[in-house]
Length: 500
Image 1 (cartoon, one colour):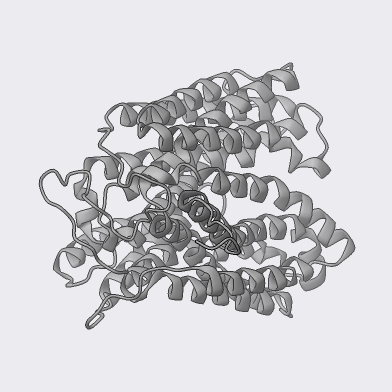
Image 2 (cartoon, rainbow, N blue to C red):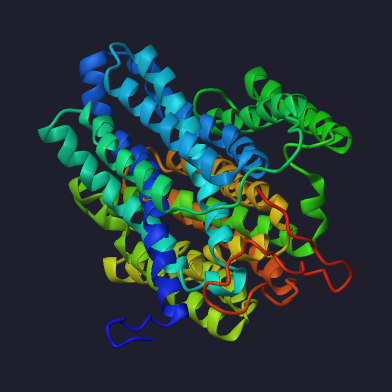
């Protein structure tokens, strides 16, 4: 090497920096999708004042959530078949199109339709982000970067309501959507230039349209049934019973179709691994607890402890900050040692303890006590949520990485929907039994909600104990996940290199 040639940086450091720099674009798109729903929720009163349509207000959120849930597995499968980078860019483009149209909506009906389009794009962003991360780094090294995703989740949950209040109060509700455009374009260009991912599979691509249709029916009936039960319609009404029946029949037909399809949208082979099934159980429980906590804890803090509604985003800080910190620490330990089973076990234990403490709150509970209990839940979520994604991805071959990542996201969403429905039924029953939604009624409802949450977390704890700690794929930073190496069960059968 000549004296004029500067020395090259160590390959591991250079590669780590490149991966982090590349992941910033992926994380920006994730943050965009997370912030949007929270911002829109805060802007709802202003939207109704401008467009009217109070009777259809809930559909502004439901359309987005439903479209996200239904499209998540489809995006994941399309990414496996057509190339994850290409499909991820398309999902960002769909989200941006929905944002522009939503900001320009002239009626509540138009806004609902455009929000559904946004939700379709958000489904791709949510599912493919984790699949793309899996193509950049191996499961062993993924812990070094999982603090970034946990921080994004915390920022989205806390920053969304705060930003929504500022935007709707000073710029108007339409800017809740227009703000997505510059950030989305930045994420789009960043990923297009920086991201390197495997190309599409070679040969003819077969799309499982019957499977997609049956899955859409099943997920739609499940999400709508759990969303409407006890609010729009009584639990025993023909509407809810009809949706439950449609979900059961749709699921049965979907399972049959997936066994026969040459390229199933949700290959049942990914569920053959015990760790993958346990990861789905744990993430479903985590989704229920997190959705319930973000919905009902601010209500308790405002209605019982006298906190200001204007600071609704800050009220969750005792739970969200530990999520980001603990996830970052646990990820680095996992990458250094290769050990990971202890983290979901600790996570479920902390969540159970925190939920059990929150089940004891009453009208005299101090903010310090409730904040400490929230922090325990946050520590548990920090240990559990990102680890379940790594566990699931380490349980499948690279060709199924998209659908595996999408399945984790789907189970988190469905778990949250079912959890919120059950929590809502308990809360309504408790407040009615206490003479109305006063302080005593709210406290009683929160007690019952977190008693159930503690039981759910206990199930996750049992699932975590049953995890088999098989070696994580990959050894050094920057080795990438393009060559998946052996599956966890690959002591029996090695997995070859595939592109997706």
